[in-house]
Amino acid sequence: MNEAEFARGVRRALDDACAELPRDVTEKLFRARQLALARHPALQAELAFAGPVSGGREVSRRNRLAVWLLALVVAGAAVGTSYWRGLQRSADAEEVDTSLLADDLPIAAYLDSGFDTWLKSNTASSQR
Amino acid sequence: MATRSELSDFLAGIERRAFKQAMYALREEEAALDAVQDAMMKLAEKYGERPAAEFPMLFQRILQNVIRDWFRRSKVRSIWTTLLSNLSPDDEDDHDPLESIEVAQDSPSWLSPEQSLSQTQVMEVLEREISRLPPRQREAFLMRYWEDMDIAETAAAMGCSEGSVKTHCSRAVHTLAAALKARGIGL
Image: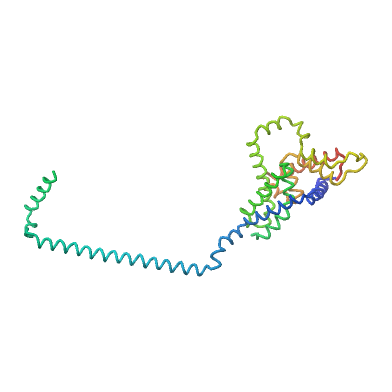
């Protein structure tokens, strides 16, 4: 008997042994196969896209609308903040002008460099 | 590219033989089932979309690696057990679970020597002798002659040369043939 003939005999015997596996083993093998097939890349890809596929267009339209609304809100907030700051600056300037005009000290005194030096030295000495 | 149903067909066709292969190597049913499941999942996850023709070679390579990993983990877990079993090779035959369980259960004492061995007994002896083969010889023999893989595929799955595959197969055949002949079994 040569190698190939012998191998055929062995193969027949092994195939017979395989056919007589206990039921619990074959059931476990079946479950193992199902688990493995659940990991097939094609199925994984299907699962990953299962959500968007059902209402994908609707979801993307809603997303775009939300982005536009958000952008509008941000732009409105920026314009509002800028306008409010302008008003605030005008009010501050107005207040300064009013206090300058209403002050007993003449405006020309603020333009006098000597007065400015005296004001600084006076402030420094009062802080000590 | 293989489809999911091609992979399913392949796994359905190979699962029993894969379990037996793992049993010959690991000799523990639960470990063998775990090894087959692990190999199936790795094949599906990493190579599931490769051409179906590559599945046998890839699966065998994964299965053999899983079996080797099991032995490595087993060694780490119980070094002392492995050490003891390596120190007493003569006792190995006496403690072979396949021999002690299956033969004891299924070889009735009233069978006379003249009666031919039943097919079941032939299978038991054959399976025991296969599990006793050196791992590389067993792998090469089963892949070549049971999985119908050619020499190149077997060499690729085993990560060795084609010459080594031929050598392993030839030695396995001679060892098995001698063992069966010594027990009066002809195939």
